[in-house]
Image (cartoon, rainbow, N blue to C red; front, side, top):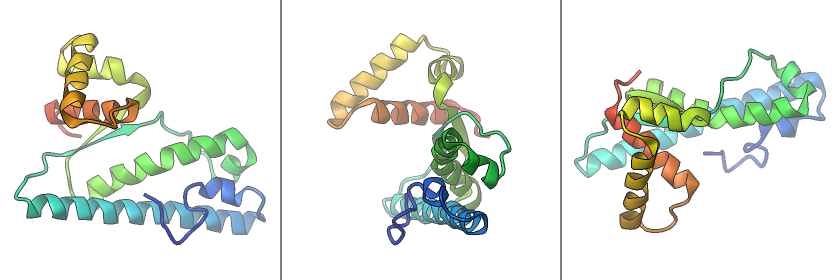
Length: 165
């Protein structure tokens, strides 16, 4: 989900770290906008491919990190940890925006840090049973089936069982 033409697109806050304030804000703004544009384009591609295969999209589930405080770009750039936090929120936020605005897909935001309790609450099933289903699903899908794939599959299952936001 990064703009292939920009070397810094994966980490726009880090790229802006040592720049003069006006230039730094411009780099960050460009990076955020690029992430949003790429997310929207990729979302449109997925929707188009899915529809060509005569499938219907029920919605979109995105694993999201804890929300960011309302820091300005200058405040983010002043503390290295904040840059990591901002970049960690950037891409999930871009996906959520793309689902809501570009593709008009129903969306459920699944809190990454509370995935276990959120899943149990939404699915009304003990987490160990949920994970057995996810593990069994992985056996039919094949590798790779690591933590990221398991969490994405769980988010999708939650999305299918949710009243979308």
